[in-house]
Image (cartoon, rainbow, N blue to C red):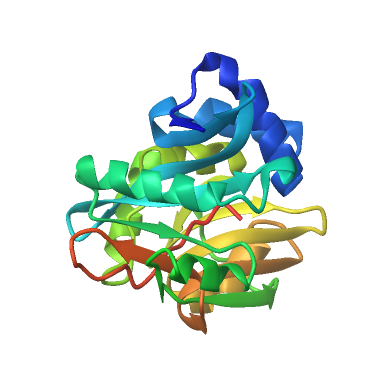
Length: 251
C-alpha cells in the first residue's frame, strides 16, 4: 500500500474512482479538476498502479487558524472492506497536523457515516437550516459581484465561528454558479432543471422570495445558518472547538 499525493499520470484513475463512487458527470469532473484540484491537497492509495482510495481537501479558515475541509472520500468497490479509508484518513490527519492545520471538517454523505467518522475522532458540529420558498410578488435588488467582493461581504454576514471558505472554494463555486449582493444580504446560487435556484443565503433571509423573483426562477432552496440539521463533523488537532456553521459542501 502506497499513500501519497498524486502526479499527472494518476488523474485518469482518480476520475474513474470518483465516477464510480459518486456518479458525477464528466462535465462536473472537468470543472473540479480545472478549478479546484491541486495535487498537494489530495491523497490517494495506489494498488496495482491505480487509485484504490482517494480524498481531497479545501483550505478554510476558523478564528484565524487554517482548517481542512475534507471532500470526496472514496474507496474503489473492489478494495472495500480492507480498512483503506481508515488508513488514508489517519495518514491525512498526521500530515495536516505537521502542516499546521488546526483541525479537519467533513460532511458525511450518508447518515451511517456519522458513526464511522466518530470512531476516527470526529464530533458533530455546524448545524444548518434550509429555506425553501416560491418566487415573491416584489423583486429584490441584486447586483452580480466578483469573488473578491463576495468574500468581503460574506465575512461581514457570516455567523460568529462560521467557517471561512475562500480561495479555491470560491474558484470552484464561480464555475458552478453565480455570486450576488443585495440589501443586507449576500448569496451564491446555481440553477437546476426544475427552474429552481439553489445555494446559500446570508443576511436578511426574509428577502428570499424577492431574490427568487429577481433571478427569474419559480422556486428557491437556500442553505442558511441557525438550523437544527446535523450537517458536518470536526476533528480538532489543537484542542480547539469546531465551527458553528459550514455553508458550502459542494453537494
